Length: 427
Image (cartoon, rainbow, N blue to C red; front, side, top):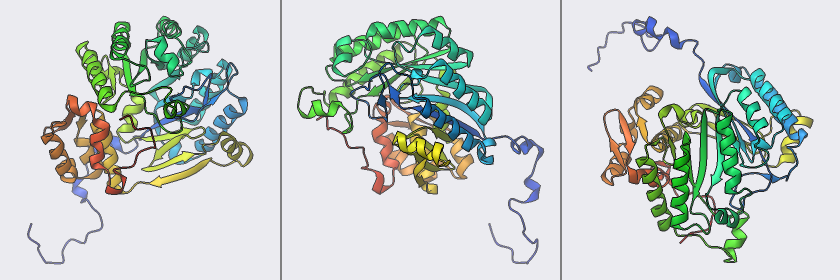
């Protein structure tokens, strides 16, 4: 464009008024999406590989004081006009073991969720569950009455010996009973978590688990790798060599065989670690948060991300409840404000982990093509055959899927690229 120097047309708005149109009126009062997470940091018995905040309570219910703190925290946020203006896409109860909540506690929490937040008509309610005595038919029916759409069952392995070695507090028969109850009460979407690289897990045991889960035909299958972080119970056994783990290379071979078997059975890879029978059963909470929607975490140690500011609640349960119930304040203990560049990195990282990343939303949000910002990195990954790039999408290849959590570090800022939680090296 050539400049015309005439001192004409005083500018007091951009873009110019002639770009306004009626077609964009629908965006004027449309509320932005928002997702709620509620953390229940209590378990019957803590698994030896678990690195999340969780307290063992055996057969006891979740303490009422903690539930009261959750209710009050929701009330504190409900007074925020920014929060009230949001439309809630999904409500996720995680832990810990959310099904340790009693029926009465569930009723109170769900009533408060509906009172304090603007729920979308089709919002997804999801509960994590242990295949144990607390996940009984009565509780599952109650959750269905609250419109539970997704139940996530932590199986980990179909081998009782492997479960025992890794400190799991359920048996295969416990899982089978819980799964059958979930089907009986007609929960629309059941997810089964399984774990690769567990102590004592052979290739035969791993593939037997994969094949038996496929036979059950749940709507979703999620695969996590056992990570031996230094804060887990299992660390002492690893240090004393009472147990050992297979190498990273062996674990990757296990996962490749498992992934191929699941894909060949007809499942769709919806992330680099999870599979659904079709896109309709994709996990709404994860999908929307990964796409950049705001996340509000309620509960001790819960993390949130609002307006590209990441923040976390008090980790210590006593400190959490005191700040809410006695001090009457939000229990936030630390935060991190994203730079514009880091917001872009967040979108491309989780866009790639979602397997088939549509690039137009990146342009809509940031006003620049993703290839302009990350073209060098993406072309390098394409040369290494980890991604395929088209005019509209960036897709992970099978190898890209297996190593997604490694290759996305290419987009990190230099000082972040080697940042890992401390864990035991597998060799």
